[in-house]
Image (cartoon, rainbow, N blue to C red; front, side):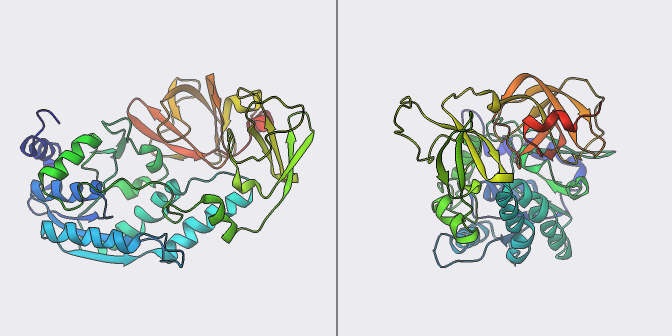
Length: 389
C-alpha cells in the first residue's frame, strides 16, 4: 500500500464529508460479514460518526447447506464486537424472494439472462434497508460498495469508483435517485488492495476473508443443478445458424449468448474440431441457435435497445457522444442514444458489441457520472422494428 496510512485515509475522508455534521450524525452500515463493509464501518467510526451496524438476511437457510447466512452473521458479529458498535439483524428474505428471486426465475423462463445484483440493490439494499435503518434512528446509511456519491444542491450524483476494476456503479444504476439522498460510500476513493491493507492494519477479524463469488442464493453449488430445482424442464432443438437440428437442450434458462461450454454437441460426424457457441435464443419455439464461428454476426451488434430507461440525471441530448457499459467490469465504450416512444433508449455504437444479452442492463455514463440504466429488452436482430421512422 506504499505510503497510504490509517491517518491519511481517515483525514482525507473527513475533509470529503465535512458537510455532514460528523460529530453528531448516526450512520447505519450494512454489515455483511465481508471485508469491504467491515472497513466501511471502521472508517466511519474513525471519522467520528456514531456508527451502528445492520445485518440483512436476504436468503433463508436451505437443506443443501449452500447458504452462508449463518457464517456471514458470525463474521459480522465479530467485526461489530471488535469495533464496539451495536449490531442489528433484519430478515428481508421474504421481500427478496418476492422482488428479486421470483423476477429472476420469470426472466429465465422467458429465455433472458437476468442480473439479480441489479435487482437486489434496487429492491432490497436501497429501499427496505434504508427505510429500516431510518426507523432505528439513522441519519445516514453506508455500504461497502465501490462507488462515489456526491451530495450536491440538486441532489445526489452517482460517480464511478477510483478502482475501475472494482467499480460497482453498474449494479447501482437502477436504484431510485431519492434512495441515495442519505447514503455514504466510504470506499469510493480506495482500491481493493488498500481496503485489505486497512483491514489488516486495523486488526479487523475478517481481514483475510476471501471475496464472495457468484449469486448469493446459489452459492458455490452448480448453477444447472440449482435451476433444475426451481424451473421445470423446457426442452427444445439445438440448431445451427443454417437451421439444421443437431441436438436437444433441456431449457433455454441454462444458456446465455456467447456461451461455449456445456452444449454437449461436440464430436459430430463431419463437423470441424472447433467449439460451438450460442449465438441466439428463440423463446417462441425454444430454439437454441449455435455456430462454430466465434465472431458470428448474430453475436456482434451496433445497436442496443432497452425497456423504459431509469434516469439518475437529466437525459443527454440525442446524438451526443457519451459512454456505456453492457456488463460489470466491461470497459466504457462510446455511443450515442436515441429516445424511443415507450421510454426506452436505443444506444448506437460505432464499434459492434459482442453478446448483447436481453435481461442484462445497459448503463450510461457522462465522464465519471452514472446517468442510469435500462434492461436490454430485445435481440438486436429485431431492433429495427422498434426504432422510430
